[in-house]
Image (cartoon, rainbow, N blue to C red; front, side, top):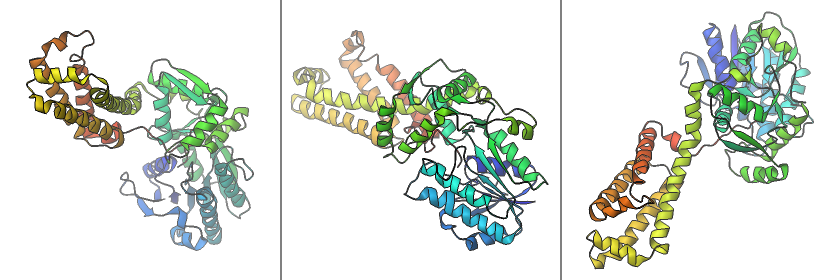
Length: 441
């Protein structure tokens, strides 16, 4: 059996390719770029946005028995991307399959999709479903709910959110989701692909129970054995303003459209009976309480903790620079510099240079990533500490600890240096390109 998987670089596609490959199936994977995993799998670099005619697909469908379309985006980079990637390109793929008259088609859609839906995401998926239904093809439409996978971008975001002590989310206690683990979804897809029966069907691939977003985070938190937390519901008027602002960031998961999807999920219309899933799997889908493990707690906390430490250190340098030059009595600063052996004619320029250095480090930490900033800070703080210990040792006895506080600061800077040396992305601000409603790509 020859299987073409499009969108093979995404969460669902990559897991499906790996599972089929492990089963000994011949898999032809298509995505924008070839992942490093499974180097012996046949890969095609395909820009899905350019595949809007049946003729473009025909060369990739020769000798193919089953086509699985896993391509999906959760927000548009350019206006019209939903229609292009969720409708125009899939319709061209379906037409090519129909023209050849051989392959079966499995279309990964989304729970809640329909042609007259309120959002572009759902509408584009729904229109593709309508086209597939009227074609002379043996097809299966899969509608996943929220998909959990350890390496999925949206799942990583939820793990991070679950470890925050306090969180405000729109529709936190009202929007209902029915999370499914990627392993269960992959198992269902493999069974559908490998079945010898050619049956036209539609299937909602959902977890065993519907729950609110707050309850889902609680389940993830419990699995990680993380500390208790409070999830508040962000009032909708505030959420709408926040979504309009957040939409300006290309990586934001919160947009006006994703907020509409959350709002409309409150009535339970985007949940489904899990009995069909249970029948196909031969067992009940994994409960969200069993999605996570204790060892995931530390990376989840670090995902927001490291950026937070980076930004607070940046603020510390900037505040120090401002206070040193503009707020603190310069006469007293000159007295300290004199005690450290700085000649009178160099004292003001030394104070200015120190303030500018602090400000530069603060801005560099805030707006760019340079690995050498961490050893530079360690060296600078250590130098300040040594000089003041020699010339102004009374600062060690100050009740506010102007020197003793340098000890934990040096420890934090050293740890950040060593972490960023191995994986610099961990010290960058946390962003997500996945919405909380779906994780198809």
